[in-house]
Length: 500
Image (cartoon, rainbow, N blue to C red):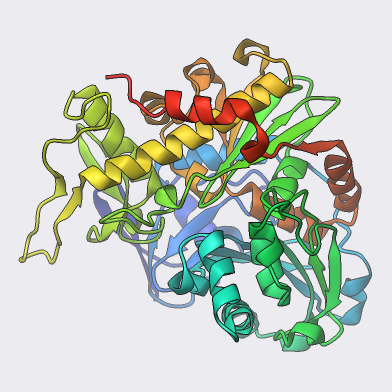
C-alpha cells in the first residue's frame, strides 16, 4: 500500500493510501484542510501540492499510485490561493477550434518569465488543470535581465538562435513530460498559449530584440501572434495553435496585459494599482476610463540575481525571515535567499536599527551560519546586497509616483493594490512597506494574486472569450516612458534611503 509523507511547518506525518484514492481525498480524510473551491472537480487548480521530485500538482485529480513526499502550502501561500480565486475572472469554458484537432485534446499555458518559467497542463475536454510545473529559464546563463540578453544577441553572431533554442528546448522538455504523465501522444497537445515580457516573446519567436533596447524603444511586434506548432518545432500537434498574447510596449509585455485582464471586474475595485515585481518591474494604474502603465529598471534583485546568496523562489530558498527564524521552500536545507526572504531580512535590519538610513551596513549579516553536520552553507546579506535592494525599491516607488501624477490621483483615491508575479506569492506586505518598496498608504489595501501572467495565459487557453477582455485592456492602455519623465529621476533619488 503506498504511503504519503506530509511536510507541513516543522512536522512530518505519514499516512497510508486507500486504493484508487486521489491525493486530495486522502488529505481530507486524514484531517488536512486544503483549499478546493471547485469541490474537487479539477477546474480551479487551487488545491495545489508540491510533490518532491515531480513539481506542483492539482491534488484532486492526482491518483496516488506509489510512495510520495509532499509539502503542503504555508498559511501565506494558502491565503494567496484564496485571494487569487476570489479575484480571477470567471469565463465560460470554450477552448475554441483547436480542440477539434484531437478526440482527447489537451493544452498548455506558459508564462515565460525572465528568470522562471511556469507551465500549466489542461484537459481541453473537461477544463481540468492536470499539472503545474515551474523551471528556471535556461537563458539566465546568458544574462540575468532582458538588456543583458539583448546585448548577447547583438554581440554574438548566433546569439539570437542560441537563446531561441534554449527556450524552445525548455518548453519541449515540459511538453514531453506532460505527454508521459498523462499517457497521451504529442498529437493530443493541440493548443498552447504564451504570456511573457516583450523581450522574452521576441526571443521565443527568434525575432531580433535589439530595437527594444535602443531609443525610441520600438519592438518588432506588440500585437497577438498566432503560429502553428510545427513552425517552432514544438513537441505537440503540428497544426496546434500557438497563441502569443499581445503586449503594450517594449517594456510592458503580455505578462502585464494578461495579468490585468485576468482580474475579475468589481465595483469594489474601480481604481487600483497592479505591480508585477520580477526582474522587470511592470506597473499599471487602472481606472474605469484608462490604464496608465510603465516599466521600471528595478533590476533582478528580487528574483535573487545580483544578490550574494540569492536564488530563485524554488526548493531550498529562504522565503520568510523574522524574529522567530526562517522558512525554506520545500522544508529542505537552506540553499540561498529568494526575493521575499530578501525583503524580510532587510526589513528586520531596519526595524532593529542594524542598517542606517542611507543603507550603510557595518558588517555582513549572517542569516544562516555554516553547519558541516547538516550540510548547510553560510548564508549572509552584504553591503552590496543592501545597495541592490535600495536601487530596486527606489525605482519601483518612483515609477508608482509618476503614474499617480499622470492620473491626478492620490493613494486615498485607490481601492486596492494588487501584487502580481510569483514573487508576490511570498512577499510580506508589512516588510515591503518597511523597506519603502510599497506605499505605506496601501499597506492594508494590498492583495497578493500570485502569478497573474500565468492565470491570464490559462484563461486564454480555456476560453476564447478572454480575447475580448485582452483587447479591451490593450485599447485602454497608455504607456509612460519613464526615461522621458522629468519627475522620475528626482523621485528615484528621494526614495533611495530607508526610514530608520
